[in-house]
Each structure stands twice: as structure tokens, then as C-alpha cells.
Length: 234
Image (tube, rainbow, N blue to C red):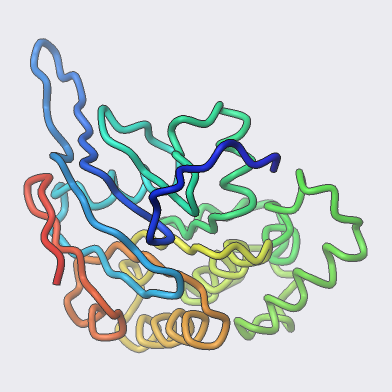
């Protein structure tokens, strides 16, 4: 990505500056997020905790460059995210952000390794190098031996591991995870949380994870609690 002009008064990897998000519902304006402000430092593991409908998933989509806030700034590595053009923001996501979606969002007719390689489709990386990178992350998540299976031939936990592998294959510095254990049994959820913790500790990934499960907050350095569109930092 050709780097646009950066903001110079930045002290953190991610700065959330008084962001709000409103939706029009009929004749009414509904606030989803109200004047949120906090920061995330390089290498931190942050959990965003809150009940369903509290605004936490909206916040995550804004952080990922997918949902324009109504007001405020998101500054990532000195870049004002929503001052970028749509094309620049797409390049930014490819370079900076890996996203684990709540429902996995694997392509059902593609094999495991083909799903993992999807983020590299627009990078210009040669096919052989793509295969090597995909195999490397599948080994990291323990699924090399299932690289040729289709998603419906995997357990829920295995599908989650494929989603994680796909999110990190481009080696982004920031990983966003939306309820990564929400559809899993407790033992598998613990395994996935252990994997995320390892990625944070061993590879220095900055992780921001949405959850409604307070047990998941134990592995993070800080928790952003969201309620009625407002946040507090713990």
C-alpha cells in the first residue's frame, strides 16, 4: 500500500478518538456507539466485553475498516482510517488486519487450504509461495493433515482453526476476532483461546477480541466493557 500522509501526534498502535455510530430506523436515529475513546498498544491482547446488542460488534467492524463511523477518528499506525479512499482502505485491511468472523464464513466448496489462501488472492504472491505460507499457518493451527478436506467435513473447532489460519496467513500485525468461541463447546473453546494466546505471546500479534464470556477475559491484558453504546476500560 502506498502510505498516505500520517498523523504525527500518535502514541499508540490504535487510537479510538470519540467515535460514534448512528443508524436511521424509520424516522428515528438510533445510536449504536456513543463517543467511545480508548487506545490499543502494539502486542496487546484486548477483550471487548458486553451483552448482545451493546455495540461491541459494531465497534469491531469500525476498527476493521468495514463500517464508517458517524463521527470521530480511528487512527492505526498513524493512519486516519476513514480519511483513506475506499481503495486505500482495502489495501490497509489486506496489509494490517486479519479478521475472524463469528460464523467462520468459510467457502463451502473450497478445501481447507484453498480457504486459507483466499486473502492472498490480491497480493500478487506467486502460487508456490502461497502454498508454502498456507501450509505453514495450517501447521501452526494443527490442521496440515486436513488441508484437502471441505469445511463440512470438519468439526466446529476445526473450522474455527481454519478461520484463524486464514486470518493470519498474510502475517497482519492486528487480529480482530468476533466471538471466536461462541459456537464451541467449553473444551474446544479453551483450545481456541489457548491458540490465540500463543499467537499473541509467540508472534506478538495485537489481538482485539469481542466476547460475552467473562472467562475469556482472563487471557487479555485489558478489557473494554461496552454497554448501551458506551465503554469503560478495565
